[in-house]
Amino acid sequence: MGKLEDRFIGDLERLHHEDDRATLARLRRGLGKPVGFCPERDGWVCSRLPSLPEPEFTRRWNDCALTASLFAIHPEAGGQGNLGASFRRLKDDSGGDGAERRFAVLLDSDQEDLPGRLRHAVTLLKSKDIPIDWRRLLYDLQYWDHPTRFVQRHWARDFWANAEHPEQVPTAGTE
Image (cartoon, rainbow, N blue to C red):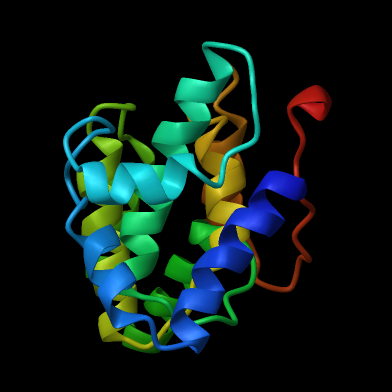
């Protein structure tokens, strides 16, 4: 993961630690809204992005805006691994098939459906007190529509494979 993820998630975590409820509420109001439809969230997010060429800037702005809104629902720190690992923990804790069904739907999401499905996933994980690795989620979002679907494959591996295997952070060049 890179500097952008560290810096951006660090800013979000400071909001939580400093109990900045007003800013977290502004970020939450962006749930379900693309960039351009929630100025209060968009301004906060955009002001924290580095100068990047287009279309990379717009793509990262979208990913960061989605992550900020999701973080504002469930700002707890301590998540480890990707969302596949988080859903594995949910499945292990709940013992039901519901987690697997929801996870399969999430994995099958295209870029357009992903924000709504992530919102449901984050809400479910929050309800069970399962933390999320926000840096990892932000990193994974930028590669969601990669032709090899390596993000989805890594999430699937960490959900369905033996939990004993340690996770390795994939990079776009290694897939």
